[in-house]
Length: 596
Ligand SMILES: Nc1ncnc2c1ncn2[C@@H]1O[C@H](COP(=O)(O)OP(=O)(O)OP(=O)(O)O)[C@@H](O)[C@H]1O
Ligand SMILES: [Mg+2]
Image: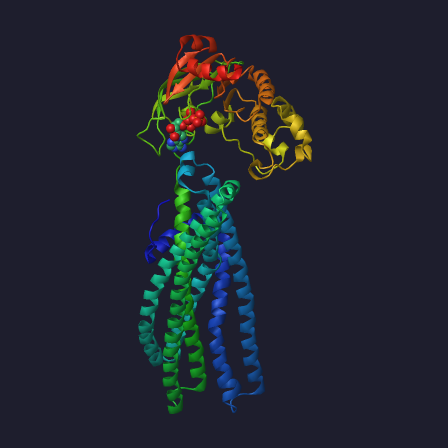
């Protein structure tokens, strides 16, 4: 992910403005919050005036104040307070609602966008980082939408209104205050910048630490086998420590900022009050005027302080928004075409597949051809085995068939249609795969198999499990099909995991079945079981099998031998053995060994 620098003030607003589409649906709620805000600000601004009335008419001038007058003044003051209370609560409610709502929307949008990205994205982005974006960054945005916007508006209103009232109360004192304010604001702004930069750093360090922890927690057995616990704990510790140090730099800067703000602002106010006190002594101001002035001045200075804090929050959120929007702006390199073609009607016997001069290199290794000049024509219902040394490009071939990547040259046709013209869902819906690294979700056996076809009934799931020779061991699990298999299937053996994965692919009942070392972890007996089940399952569908154990592939209609991304030999077991090439060599090694 690109690491843009701290946003400037201007780009802060730009970044936050790009969140507007998320706020748009809630115009009505914003309007309500705005009304509550205006009422509350109005009430706040009315309080000092009410105070002046209270001082001048309630206590001050005993002669002019009747009891009724006093009562009315105090009642009015309480009325203002009551309005303030109701309006503030309403504002808090509306604005917090907005914050939570918008954050939930953003989280959903980012997550559902991320899960649509192509494998290339997940090769370059750590999942922990994405998680941190989804949790920490969205929380920052929540604070802006949920509090900062309303704080900013409220304090801007209070600042402008308070200032106007200050002028009305005493233009001379206010002018002096304004002069002082300039002196006060400059250092605050300068320090604010520093706080901002440190904030983004601090967020990045936290993302680093959680990405690292996520990776390590997923590899615990390996870490412990290599006795790496202490090392990993230290590595995480120093990462957390860095995050702490960065946070501390931000907090120190923020503390200085707070101190500067309070001392400077209050210093200025005290100075002006001192002038005011002299004015009262000289008889040019009433006590009530001075009281009113003091309250307005404290409202204005409070507003300035709050605005500077809000600015800091907004900067942090702008950084977060930038990163989230970066994620949202990513276009997957693999996407359905705008006007996808329908899949041509299929023969009953499975899908047909053509590779026409396919050349491909992985995006991360553009100068190394993982596949080159691949030509292949597979008839419906054919079973084709792909063999070849490790790194030959067998798995890569499957990745291209699923359109996880697009080839740089040539084309792949499924039932005669270029797979780039098909809707991704349609294409992948037609393919069942048992990947080389089986994936088990942290759910029970039933749900893990059902992943192949979420609408399948329990009976269908069990039928698929029987086909994959998985039924027997699942029945023996403590709770049978309802047994929780552990995160990533840690409660199963490797061979058991493979059989679950096979059952899942069979349940999907696809016209094209891809098996990548699907039985590699099974003992000879189980493999024979699964093999005969698979042979039954292969009837009526096209199957590609990758296998290192040649015993697995002997009965295939055709065997393709790959080396260095090319097809080097094609034929049946017998014809390839007769050819005396790479396959014959492999066969000699493996079968000699078996028979010895
Ligand atoms: N995501 C990737 N990015 C870059 N290179 C890759 C990636 N995946 C595989 N490769 C490279 O592409 C080549 C072919 O890999 P592939 O996984 O297709 O081999 P394979 O024939 O399936 O091997 P094996 O039998 O060991 O599974 C290898 O050189 C590998 O290093
Ligand atoms: Mg492979």
